Image (cartoon, rainbow, N blue to C red):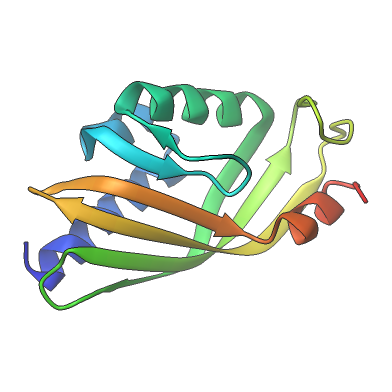
Length: 137
């Protein structure tokens, strides 16, 4: 893929995230996608990603703002820097009690592209900053 096609693919993925369109997100990833969530170990496969998206959706309402997408020449890797704006709606195990806390934290996503699909997603946000916004330690 070209650099422009890769940027467009990543932007479609992030736009689907903002629309809470999990099916749309999953249409853009490979069957054996590697997902590195910011708060857990790597998970492999589209079904694991579907589960992770559903779990996050039960506890948080999140959108991405201030999105800047960058891609390397050749389009194999891309990155997106953004602000995650969210509301903690339902208490999750291991986190403080949900009371509708809102937060805005900087984040980064790193992507690998293979045969026109996203084959790796590595998400990053500072867990200390995020936990503090939720009212944790």
